Length: 254
Image 1: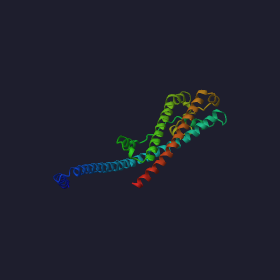
Image 2 (image 1 turned 180 degrees about the horizontal axis):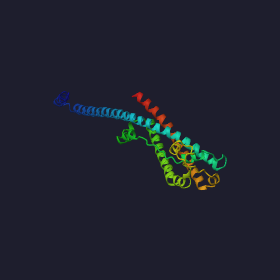
Image 3 (image 1 turned 90 degrees about the horizontal axis):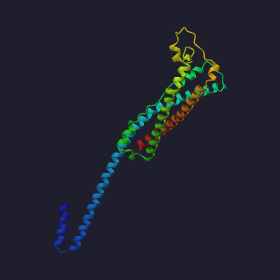
Image 4 (image 1 turned 30 degrees about the horizontal axis):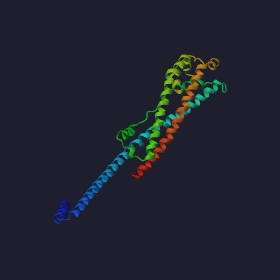
């Protein structure tokens, strides 16, 4: 092909057709440029297709990570739902709306429990480090960013909550109410531990309990923390389910 074009140029020069030669040379240059541009476009198309394929492959890992997260999020949502119920019951007892009963110590004890999630971020970290997130569908990009932002908020709230338990609630509880950890506590773990204890358990004094303003304030603090977490878990669960549906639909396309 190159020899063919060279012969045409030589013939034009030998015939003295300089003008036609220049026009032909210019046309040849344009053809070469167009060829290069087409080659670059094809190469870019192939590269984009390859990057998109890799990004969608990584999305499958993200999807699996989210499914694992969902198991934790659903557990934590249910856990905080119970904790929120118990904190409300304690609050009502402090406010004398409900009487102190044999479940009061159970409510107090339940607020001691530290829980936290441990999301798997291997998929999103891989796709971020590879720079392939930009090749993912824009709606999925936005949903992924929103989901992991919510997870970051959850981790921050869990840290606040657990730090409060360790530094404030737990020390105060064990200093003033450790005697409530006995066979009478309406908590199977505690009951099993003390099931052979022959001693007579000390009971909670209602008057002292109702006048314990510092502890009441701590119960309020725990209630507020739990409520914030409960809302975030529900938000993350909804986002996770919607994101899984979107990723699955995208996978069907490819």
